Image (cartoon, rainbow, N blue to C red):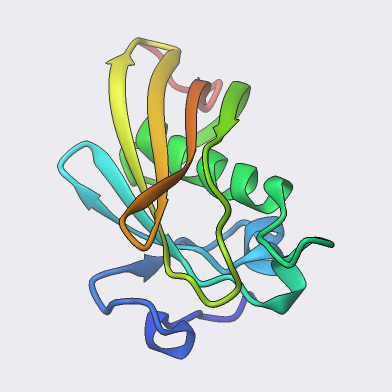
Length: 145
């Protein structure tokens, strides 16, 4: 059984909660979220192990956090499985150890099998990463229309 991560243990606001079930995200993060209607709001407090040689947050960590945000948009915050088809990112500014990173996902279009999501990641009220994603909704093969 996976540990239950609590936002207060990571200096993340209490309205966020942990998404259980993804060990990679737990080992990298943990990440936290809440849903603002159909749009995910995510939070992450990076630590020293998330930094690169320049002592800023590694781009791969920022991309993983953006992907997490996009997939929550695709699932609507429910336990629906999904897979990322594409994630296009632009690194806008550096983020630092201890910054509270906040992600905002905007669902642009939700189709039967594909969801298009725009993501922005902020640190100290400035955009550090912008991304767009195409997410495949994975449905149980036993589901019938």
